Image 1 (cartoon, rainbow, N blue to C red):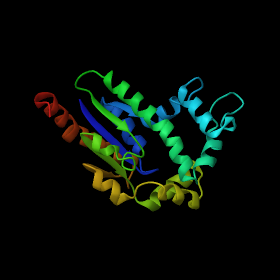
Image 2 (image 1 turned 90 degrees about the vertical axis):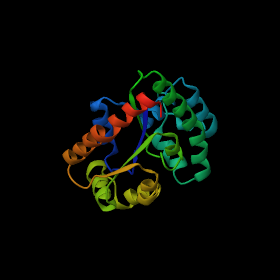
Image 3 (image 1 turned 90 degrees about the horizontal axis):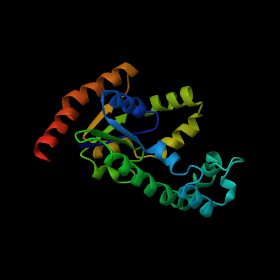
Image 4 (image 1 turned 120 degrees about the horizontal axis):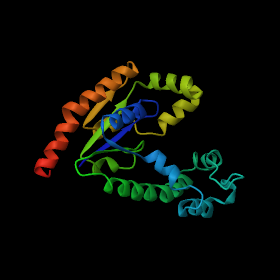
Length: 206
């Protein structure tokens, strides 16, 4: 089982790369989706969030009020660390559970936005980074998400920089063209690197 860590800055194209890898046969474990799952109503994760931040973090249906929580933690590092200490261990435990259920020989891709920031890149056989020029990412955030330039730059500044992610990567795919070009690059990487590496791992155990 080849374990791949996939990451990239906001609006770089990581989600498209993940979908492409899934279509090619990889098991993609989306940490963002798991972060939502572990704080669903009835979970101990949601209970821990309420204990830490108060019942004001719930909406009228008893679900996590994400905008309210974001407003509390975004500009407060201590509170953000508290939230991370609740969510991250539960996400990692759930990701490990899903990985263990995968058939032998599966290429398992962990889609983790903060892979480098949290030091998790060291835990994978292969690290793939999707990157794009900063100005292009800002343009995409404005066009696709309605974000202001100031908000977009703040989101970028809160993540690892291009050089830091590149230093942790086995391969960096720069998504500065069309979506079709990125898909083609991911497919080429799958055929030329990931499948052979997985076959080597199955044959040699390393």
